[in-house]
Image 1 (cartoon, rainbow, N blue to C red):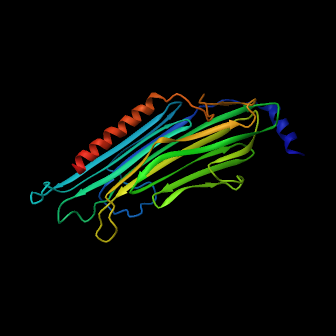
Image 2 (cartoon, helix red, strand yellow):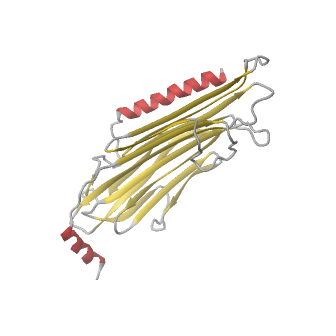
Length: 290
């Protein structure tokens, strides 16, 4: 039996239902321990300070900050070393933000054996959407848009997933200082550029999820290359877009969020996230490099 007749039968017994959305955010900061000339995986435990936050039908926020210093009266600054790591994350439907920084200041001849400093931020969400149409399948455009900056030993990765009973589509992204932004997609996406046109069933609940992870690390290990300052600033942000190829087809999300690639008002929580980053960065630079 052809696929469309099977679907037609299923539609007689089911109708689209909008569901709750979920969000998750985690942030951690760590000093000491091992050096991380190439920190992997992204989750580096244990953290000296951090948070996790998860909600249903609400946004999630997390932050972590840790500071450590050693005094040395024989140095000009009065310190042998100072080091700090910061991480923040913010998750809402279609909008993911994460920031991490790590830095150290060395001024003594005998620093600790290791000055490893790591910040890690992670943001995730899940949602559903439906497309109401007289057709069985609808073509839609999906996009994972990543915008941010980094310096030093920093990394970012993220992606989106669109899934129905019929198929699953994945777009993943990654970037590092030594590795420009690249995309990796599921085999059912022909051109992997961060954007794709795919076919999904109409009048059916379709799940969508997205994530963003950032890492920044600094260390001073005499047996490895020194990394003194690192920032991964992706508070500007990871965005997930969905739109119907035929604009007459209406997309309705379970969260009520508009995933279309048009300008949308910036939620107040985003400005709070940005001001939090600014405050942490100013404090980091004043305390480590004055």
